[in-house]
Image (cartoon, rainbow, N blue to C red; front, side):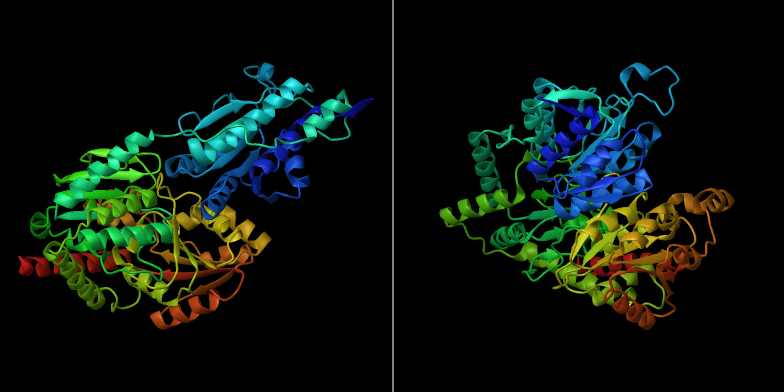
Length: 593
């Protein structure tokens, strides 16, 4: 018996069912004509939660936020032409941070390329510099052989983006009209239909071994010998989604070796109900003291996580001759200073646990704590100065905003940090805190695009409230995304720091260039954000004192709605206060020499 089908619809439904069988649960879709078959397939599959975005750029970053929060692949669907290019910024960020995305672009038939056909560009491996894998699905064919190939490549896409390569993958889907389900194009037999509607019982691709067991044991043994012999070591934990298992093992290693842990504000280590005896959070300030930095030269550095945020630590590493070893899941090289000795592809938790086991078995013990004590004392002295100069500063010092947020933030909440000054100030001024807080950022490529969209994606799949700390230009840049907040009523509070332009440039040398600096870098806008937020039916408030700010923020975190809390600041004043703090720390560090 022959059955009438639309080849595009059956092809797309087969693809989506296979994604579901692999474990995909979320999709971010943008309307279009050419992607109609894919859109219908996702929309009608009840095992996938699909979100709709008019703006492809917002859609890409929204999917990025979901993938960050769930650590699972999220599908993105768009139509052909320039719509595909709008996804590129989010794909770049996902590539740099190894965030799993499955990018599905609809395309015109190959014969229309280069013929002046409407909405047709060359989409063949369009994102080749910033994806982990590409596949062109070709025009749909209703044969078991071709359907089997589609299933096989779908499984491969899932495992590439989540396991073996981790990061965004791209599948291009050419389609010829018609696209609607009842516009039949083919007649197929029952066996072909059953095969198309079935899913693989087992994963087609096993995870590859990154290194032999012998090599991994060799690495561990070598590092164990080094840390046992060297008394002056530092553990650096850069940005990353580190969980309690790693944090506990890292603490054990630190305590056993008497090594301080320099924990990036985006590492998760400064927050939560775990031991923080050796966690150093004020290193950026005391490492800016060149005289003091020269006196604390380590012999060895173990670096976990991505590239550190701190300018002070980056400068320190650039002038440090210690053997530095980077440990992360894929052996990525996070070393702008070009001074690291090696990068090991190793799960950080397993690495720390393995070192601890070897040291346990050998009966290793280090009594000398003078190295650790010296650095902890510097951290304590810096914390005291921060409390006097920053944490007790008048309204509205940008640096103090961080601690005020941490005082009010509910236990278990998410904090998304925008690029430019918010993520830097958070790293500079966020103190250790026993609240459970999950920190997110887009520090892969560090752009200011798509920040609100990413926060909305995080909020959409989180049971806990999300706070976004963002500057005025980044907020303006992603205004389109507020349409989604209004549509889905996400639980998001946006703390908007408005310094009327590119405030970060005030701390750069270009700030000394008068008229050119003001006209081409600061770019004042004088926007009325209250009216813009009102247009998207969000709740808007403006704070004029620290007391009012805390009251408004406390109220906002208790409701499931979009709230924008604006603080107008003076960048020049905030920069002066930062410099006063760093100068005071330098004087205090010199006293210790």
